[in-house]
Length: 236
Image 1 (cartoon, rainbow, N blue to C red):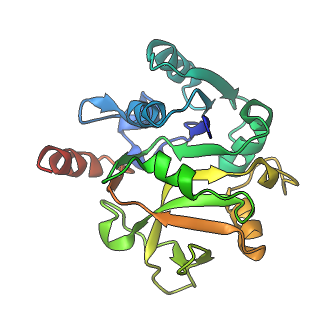
Image 2 (image 1 turned 30 degrees about the horizontal axis):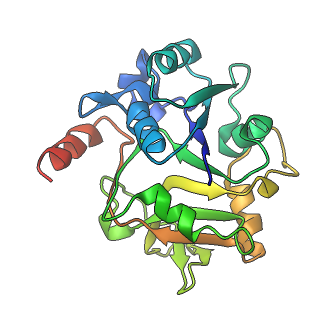
Image 3 (image 1 turned 90 degrees about the horizontal axis):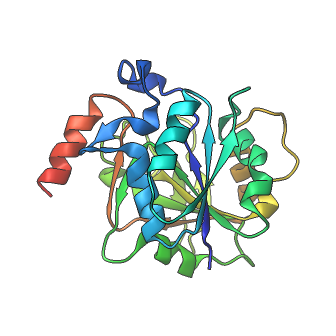
C-alpha cells in the first residue's frame, strides 16, 4: 500500500501571471476551487495518509491554506524558502520526510479526472519494484487538453519508456503524476536540478515505465487555459 505522496507547490508560476502576482499558483482557482485542492482531494480519495508539500513563493500563504484544508491526511512542509530547488532538488530536500518506501509525486498545477477506474489505484496495481524505479502516468498527446508541447515519451508494449527525439513528436505527455522508488533519490548532481536527472538514470537502466491515463487531464499552465478547462468540465 503506497500511502505517502509529494505535492510539488514551490514554483514561481511565471506563466500564470498576472494571477500569480499576489497569490501562489497552487491557490489559483479553477472551477471554484484552488488547483492545490483539486490535487489534494484526489490524493486523499486515492488513499494517501501523508502528503509532503514543498513551499517557496508566498510560502506563508500556502501553509495557511494547507492548515485550513482538512482532508484527513497528515501534511508535512518541505521548506524551500531559502532557495527554490526545482523538482529534483525538491525531492532530495524532502527525502527524509518521504521515508523509505515508494511514494506518489504529483504536480499542483495539473488537473486530472478519473476514468473508468481509480487512477492512483490502477497505478498501485501496475507498480512493480522489481522492474521499476518510476512509473509515470501519461496521457495520449491527442487528449492532453490545453497542452501545447510535442509530447514527452514513447512507450513500448510492456510500458517501458524512452524519450522523444529532438524535432520529433512523441505520442504521450507526462501528466505530473508518478510513483517513485526512494532508491532513485541518490547522488544529486547539484543542489538545484530537475527530476529529468532521475528519469534519465532510470531510462538507462531500462527501469522507467508508464501507464496511459484513462480519464481527463488538463494542463492549467496559463490564465487563458482556465476558462477552457472550466467550460470542458461544465459540459462534460
